[in-house]
Length: 438
Ligand SMILES: NC(=O)C1=CN([C@@H]2O[C@H](COP(=O)(O)OP(=O)(O)OC[C@H]3O[C@@H](n4cnc5c(N)ncnc54)[C@H](OP(=O)(O)O)[C@@H]3O)[C@@H](O)[C@H]2O)C=CC1
Ligand SMILES: N[C@@H](CC=O)C(=O)O
Image (cartoon, rainbow, N blue to C red):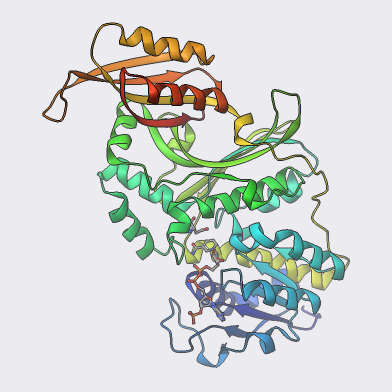
C-alpha cells in the first residue's frame, strides 16, 4: 500500500543511457514504486533535438528542450547529458532547489566534483553517481558504504570498456585499433569524442573519482598520470602474447609511502602488461573489473559490464530507488567524506616492474654494456630474451632484446631508458611497458 505522494523525476538526456533509463522506468514503474513506497513519475526528458532517433520508444510528449523548467519542482533529477556545461549548471540548479541528483557524468565529477558535493551538502541534498565508474558494476556504493570502516590500500581496475574492447580485439582477432574502435562506437561504449577513451581521459576521470572516494581526499583530475593506448601496436600486442602477457589499460589508485617517508596517494592510468593467468587478463570485450585491496577485507574483485546503455541504466535506476527511498523515509543527506587531505604523490614516487624492448647491435660486448647501464641506475634485470633480426632495413646485424626488470622506481627507470636511448650499442628503444599484477 503506497501512501507517500508521487515523486517527480526529471531526466536530462535520452542518448545511449538516458533512453534506456526512461524506457525501464516507464516499463517497471509500478514495481519500483512498491520497492520505494512511492510512485516515481517521469515528468519529462530534456534533449537537444526533439526529432533525433532514440534507442527506445519514448512518448513524444515527455520530450522537451527546456531543461530549466523541467528541473523546477522535481524531487529527483537524473543528469545523463554528459559534458561539463550545461550539465554542471543544471545539477547546481537542481541541488539548490532541494532535489537529489543522479549522474553518470564522470567528466563533470572529476572536474567539478568538490563544487557539486559542497552544493549538495549545503542544502542537505544527495548526489548519487554509481553509473559514473564502471557502468553497471556496483563500485561506488561498496567504497562509499560497505568499506567505509576499512582502509583501502590499492585499487587496480579496468574501468574503460572501449579500450578494453579494442585491446581485446587486437589480441584475439588481430584487428587494428581503428577497426576495433569503430565497432566499439557502434556498440555504444565509446564516448561522443572517442579520444576521451583512447587517450585515457575517461579512465583518468574514473581514477580521480575512485581515488577521492577510497582515500577520503580530493584527488584532482590534473594530478592523475595518464597514458592512453593510441601508441599500442599490433606488434606489441603479439609480442606480449608470446611473452605470456596481455596488454590492458589499467587505472591504479594507491596509498603509498614515498622514498622520503611521505604518505600519500597516487592515481594513474597507463597500458600495462598483465600476466595471461591473472584474473584481469580474462576480462574481455567491453567488460570492466575492479580489484580492491583493503586492510581488513583483503582482496575484493568486482566484474561486469562497464559500458552500454542498458547496463549503465541499471546503475542509474539503483541510484533512483536509493534516492527515492530517502525521500520517503526522510532524514538528512550524508555528506561525502573528503577531508583526509593526503598529498598527491608524483609519478616519480611509484615503483613497479618494467619490460623494455630494445633494438641493439648484434656484436660482442653489447649485453655487458647494456647490463652496466641498468646497474648504474640501480635497476635490477630479472629476465632477458634475445632474438636476432635480419632484413633489408638492417644495415648491420641487429638483435631485439626484451628485458624484464625487478621492481624499480619510475625515476630510476626513466634515467635507465634515457641512457639506453643515448647508448651507441642501442639502435632504438622500441617500447617500455609497465608490468602489473605479478
Ligand atoms: N554510454 C555509456 O556506456 C556510458 C555513459 N556514461 C555517461 O553517461 C552520460 C550519458 O552518456 P550517453 O548516454 O552515452 O550520451 P549520449 O551522447 O548518447 O546522450 C546525451 C544525451 O543528452 C542530450 N543532451 C546533450 N546536451 C544537451 C543539452 N545541452 N540540452 C539538452 N539535452 C542535451 C542529448 O540530446 P539529443 O539526443 O537530442 O542530442 C542526448 O539525448 C555521460 O556523462 C557518459 O559519460 C557512463 C557510463 C557508461
Ligand atoms: N566510454 C566509456 C563508457 C562508460 O563509462 C567506456 O568505454 O567505458
